[in-house]
Length: 296
Image (cartoon, rainbow, N blue to C red; front, top):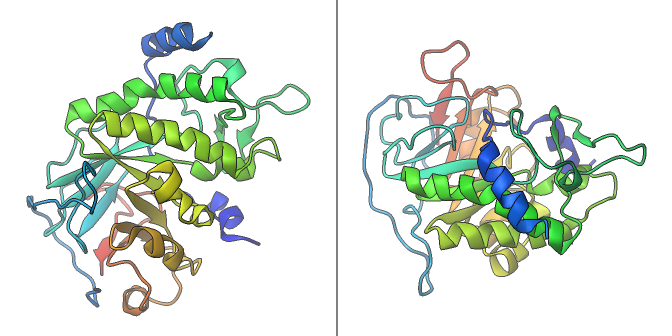
């Protein structure tokens, strides 16, 4: 069984990044036609400089090996020494130095109204849902017209990330094509991802690939992704498929309930990304039951 299929039961989702209904109605009208061993904990607020990858006009990224936190379960105090923080688009940036905005780019979120013809359906006519998240429907990215309409619907959320002060955006569920029962393929995902990344860049944001190691160099060279956010690449033994493409700009989250050995083992492996953390599965904020955080 491939890691992509297994991750269906493991992927962690944020609270809803809902598209405003007014914005959705407007868009539809327009488009109908070096590792450190051990663990570190604590809290503070730290600001760090960012760097830029080689290439004129490339979006700013964080320094190689920067400490980060993944706060999709809700905003939380910034751990001591952390300078990169990812939060849901409905939360304010952490202001720790480099802020990443989470957007569910390839599936619907509860509470958001999406035109029925832009969602995938079964042969029976029923909406196709993500088996791991039954209140989310897969976007139909099978045609250029539908991809443009979907991209326009997501544009206000992307622009909102920029307006809120985020530095980058990560688009979740790039791999939803693998759960489409054959209706979509990787090429459809690439074509739609390119539209989203172009919009992010136009808004002044760097754009991150989420999981999907099978994308390979296409993510950087064809889509234009600037970095990657990955879950459990050590568990699935696929970290190199991301670091070979994005180098030091890979953020890896391993979860406490499903480790390959101990977290010290994870941090000690040669192919573990320099920016790797351990989090509880629910990504609970600090002070709430179950919260866990450590970093290599």
